Length: 212
Image (cartoon, rainbow, N blue to C red; front, side, top):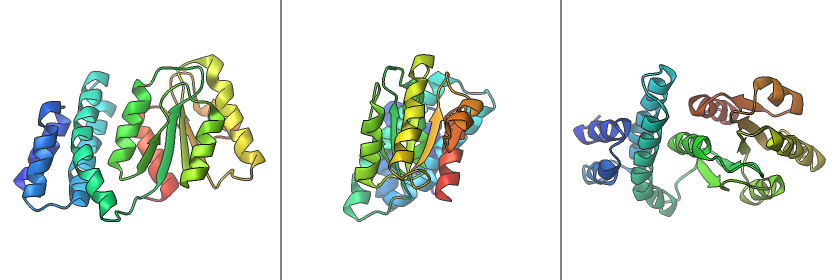
């Protein structure tokens, strides 16, 4: 591991947003490939952040700072990957279900999954379930990740399972749900493939689905 890569990891873990792009550029200048920067630098940093969050050494503000710093680096190197025919490890459609506009958790999960090297289609918040399913079909995504903090919108998650079953896509497209209003019991009840308590857990669920 080079000094530049160590410095990048440190910048992301500490959430130094203004330094994210420069630290990434220095890794490129030192001869690291975009793939190395994403997997050995940015992903490794988010894994450390995840561990700190799980150990309650970090809380939501620090995780958000780290996620935003991660994106500074990703915005620089991701275009280079796609230009070089970069292989994605999997495609995920993510969104907050219709009726809910709380997206902080969704954004952190997006950062963690992007850090794994997955291609993420972020549908935003208050998204109709049928739109998420259509997007997954059109992009060839293998995971739909849905979140909600509000109990009234749980019906949308149940509807997602029904639509996938109706179209014969259940199992082919895996579903993972999360957010304050959800639970493992609810996920089992509606037939979702996975549930996660937080963003760290979500990245483990997605990794398991994709065999990473």
